Image (tube, rainbow over all chains, first blue to last red; front, top):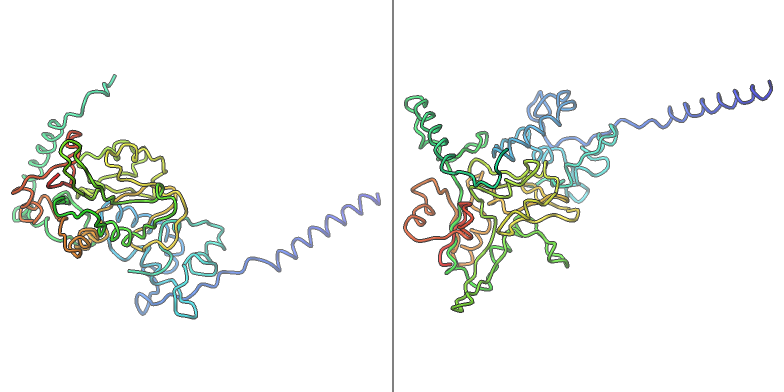
Length: 128
Length: 249
């Protein structure tokens, strides 16, 4: 009887400590660097922010096929333009790679636990 | 059973194509001229087969020992030379050719020939290797699995495989590990109305051995020169109808 009680107490203690640790060390919400400019006075990004959060990958996928196969080179959903606007500069005024920790793409993707492979090929810093 | 050894009947394909085109021509709205399609394309319009990009290279003007085109290409795409030269990516190679019989020597740049019937596209198992409507043969690296069948199929040794992770790529020219790549005719420049980097470099070096333009536009420099003087395809016997042609070889 004493043995069972002791085991139960131990398990409860373990469960509580795990819960407490989780409450203290939850992954903090990403603190995104600000974009370089706004699309208009009322709208930040090329689509409303909620739409971009949910669907940016669909826009990029669509644009990628149009650009590679059909030569469509509009700027609205272009990855290059994302990087031009969403990258930030270091203290010397040099751009930081967009997939560096705490930068725009990586901070959110680390939070969501989603791996990007865009930047195996694509440039990570602004350019023409 | 399909007889795979039977050659493709191009005449038949051409006939069907022409028949379809003439039906399309009849269906055009009055007042719309086909000629209008040939001029500069706005960025939101897809490429069309109204044009076919091509290059004419005069090997008699191509100086031996000059590699201005190769260096310009390396610079444009960020191609680097490593200690393992045989594994490095190359879009253009400079070849010195000698006729064994006569001893005549000449020099020429060898690049993707942007074939009308590209063998690399035929063999690609994923559809990554493709020909754009305006004749530029490209690799869609998003769907390339790096199998390198296209490298084996290409008679011009035009393609390279990227063996190692790359950094600091150019924003206009994504390229990365595990994919095959080759000359793009500087598609990022062409789409903005420009000319390939190698052609500019050749002119800047004072050789003017390379001409780039629209083969379908009878008024273009390249079309007029190809009509007036004799030019050759490399390995014309393969029937690939290359967009790159050479004079003086």
